[in-house]
Image (cartoon, rainbow over all chains, first blue to last red; front, side):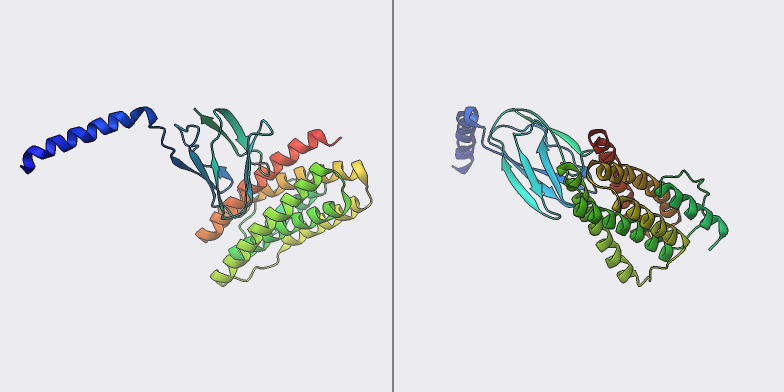
Length: 109
Length: 176
């Protein structure tokens, strides 16, 4: 009995997965690290609704400031972290306002 | 302390005051001297930043000065914790003395200026000062540092000084 039921179970799980697929925009959480006056790799595959956690491991204060002047401006004390929910799509170059050579680009789809 | 080291230091001090000095490669300061030089270099920039915060009304210049005070204080706090951990007593030396002397002369010069003239002179000196210290860190202090943790902190210091130099150069274009 068990052997027979198992394929059925898997199959229904498969159906469920397929059924859920169109709504698969279940939000993800990504991290972005700043350390030793450098921005780490910016996560790829970001989508609207996802959450990005900025982690400042450095001894210095940093920020993630969109260069368009309004989209986001996250200030991070040394050794702190902050979450940001991505609420719009687009390509957003950003810098650390205190150390403008620290640069990155967020791409949100 | 060798004469060649003194020669290097004098060169650094001259550059700080805006005169081009001929830097001579150092024979090699020890870790206690390196720690003293690095701490002094950071501390002098904190002092310059405090002077700017007391005198300048320019928003950009003040934000930069705050950044200098904050960042260099952060590194120096780490440096103090490190020398304590390593049980090293930072040792005064001709380079630190030359840096102090050059910075004192610059503070006195800037004290007589006000408004935009002060802002321009402060930022111009910040560019020159960071450039000088970058050179000392890259050519003398980092290569001669023996302790790995000290070397690593100096490398962070070099990255910081370079970042500050770039930022000061950027501001220099706008403060006219």
